[in-house]
Image (cartoon, rainbow, N blue to C red; front, side):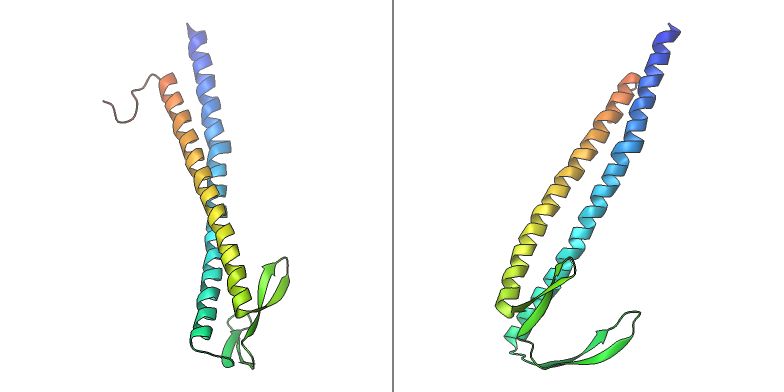
Length: 149
């Protein structure tokens, strides 16, 4: 009967490798990608709040400090805040009025929400696969299921 045990061991090893080499890295990647989208969402949310504040307080010009990188700041005069440039990706910046910018931000936020939902579903699906494979390994080892005594 040693043959059956060897086959069982081989199956268990293949399942464990599938979890470690495929499912766990996929899970880590999906979580990292979703985190990137959360960061983008925060940038757009901050921009929306800033534009709404400018609008609410009728700020048409301002003086501000700009971070040039490496925490080196420079004073900047913005003679007209009513038109702003928004980074739309791939190195392109588009000049918008406040309302155009807010419309663009809303559209981007909706898209980011959908992407977050997709990644959240993917993450749940990978976690379910890991659980299923681990239960399969437990069965092969003839161990009682988790939670049962």
